[in-house]
Image (tube, rainbow, N blue to C red):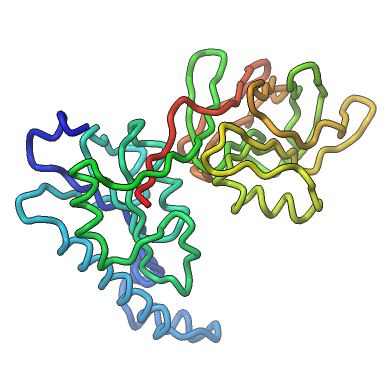
Length: 301
């Protein structure tokens, strides 16, 4: 990537609005937002204090970018419309989920730095660094000497060639709360199912949605590491009937991809990492194959 950086590097800082900013967007003024919270037994001051800490983190990160470098601030909601350049240095400022939201839009090998603005609230699995380290991390990434962890991603590919990737998990199911109907195939095993949908998770995703399913059903399925070329399949609430089964509900996915053939007249969808707005439609008869992606996330550690 060094050859691509003949001009000054561009730093893209990705963030999401704070709860305080969301309240102001909804209620227009602080006073109206405070009144709304008060009528529900809540106070605006804790929300305001967190906003101030997030704002200070943002100031520290932006201040660490050399003056001659280019910079862009990007809201999470704009990710699917933003064109990242191969030489961009990307900073995710917020909770761990923001890294997953961003990862799918980056080029393979593009470094991403996760900054944790509030360690008491965010676990920091992916946002590992304090804001004060931003300057050194950016300098290391620009010089190509940053320590990188290559995290496995999952890819869903439709039979018409369209595809998407995800860092945590890929969901296949119905867009509403209706049952999803499909045929599930994994190697020699196949089963028609009616369920609340299925997820195929990476090692990174084992601390998210996949973990809640695993704990709830007390699964003993092996947990792949975040860098291992393996995924896990979990079917949610499969319903056994005369036409549908509930035997193939979890498995490790490595060399053989998961295949799903839609039996939904409408509403079938595939999306990754909870971004429902950036999804693929899955009408009746459409086939989707889910496997380890050739792309991975280059997380600066």
